[in-house]
Image (cartoon, rainbow, N blue to C red; front, side):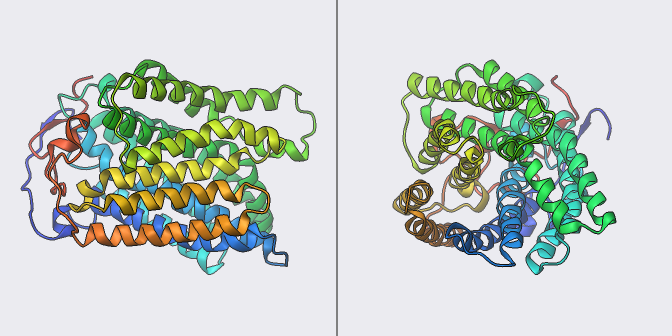
Amino acid sequence: MPAERQVRMKVATGGFLTRSGGLSGHKAVGTLYLVMAVLAGLIGGGLALPLRIGAEGTSWGRMAIDHGALMVLFCALPALVGGFGSWFVPLLVGAPDLAFRRLNLASWTGIAVSFGLVVAGISTAAAMVLWCVAMLGLAINIVATALNMRGRMVALGAMPLFVWAQVLTAMMMVMVLPVLAAALTRGLLAGTGTDIVARALRAFSGPEAGLLLLPAAGVICQLVETFSGVALRFREAALGAMVVLSVGGASVWVHDVFATGLAAQPAARPLVEQAVMALPMLILLVAWGRTILAGRPVFRVPMLWAVAFMAMLVAAPFQALADGGADAHALVLPAALFAAFGGFYYWIGKMAGGAYPEWMGRVHVALAVGGSITTLLPGGVMAGVAMQGLSMLVFIAVLAVALLGYRRVSGNYWGAGARTLEWTLPSPAPRDSFAGFMVGGTGA
């Protein structure tokens, strides 16, 4: 692509695919990622009940693998990176689309095929290898867009922290996914596919936590700034913490295996790996807390999800102490999902043009957060799972109401606190939203 060129395209006003730039437009593909994330969440959540109540049997191990893969690899990550990344990285940097439109659609297709293979029970190891390749394509696309497609007025250092979080997540993927793919390929060639998937995913739990927390933190930065009404405090420290989490998290490969013992490992290594993950999140918590105190926070539904995310991070060390350090990740996935829900409620008007009923969103927050907490209490598994199931029903109802146009929204329906570029556009965002902007990595 030329270093600098003028992009001029017609802005369409038809149906969704027309507005989104066709099937390969970043908005259409981002929506496909979000749809797949909802489906994976429903199926993976359905598998949670027998796992939570401790059902045993020959299929228990396979069920645990499928549940973890569906919730992390096909629900949380596709929503946070594929969905919100595809949709909003171009909008927040003033680009008309992602750098490689067809690669974005091809990446989604690869992830969708691997999702189908896992659901059908056909070669989970092969599905995971395909997933790694497809996610690498998505990662390359996000980095290329942020570095080379920024509008002239968007300097690299001034990019929103949401975009920085997406870029750092993508860079982390480039570091860790080839390693995971190589381990899975070795298992396939050796004929031990199912066993190698279990071992590889368990070793991958460290980078997995970083991959979930980084894009989630980017979403939370957007929410805290908007609903506090002030710019994020300690921005440089927060960005530095994200960099540490990206680079350091890529090296935390066997964190979850320490509980079962690792031969010839320094005694201090578990503490170092925990610090690599915990200290950056502590810095981000301080930045978010200081921003809330400096502003006049308004606790609308997206902000409630942000508070729930922060509460999960605060509770994680106590959970680690209570369970010997192995189950701290039990709070990482719910926290990432809370951030994804916060992003949904924050941007659904920009994506679909319709608002959601505030009271329904608050009911969703209460059920989801209450269910997540209840499942961690002694004897609360059944009640917690029931609450989480009800929360998903409420979410589906909210989604239906918003898509059916319960109430149309303006371009900036959050008011003065929403200051990033997507809020300068009408709702829903039109096709090639920044056609006519100068792009090509300018403004460094």
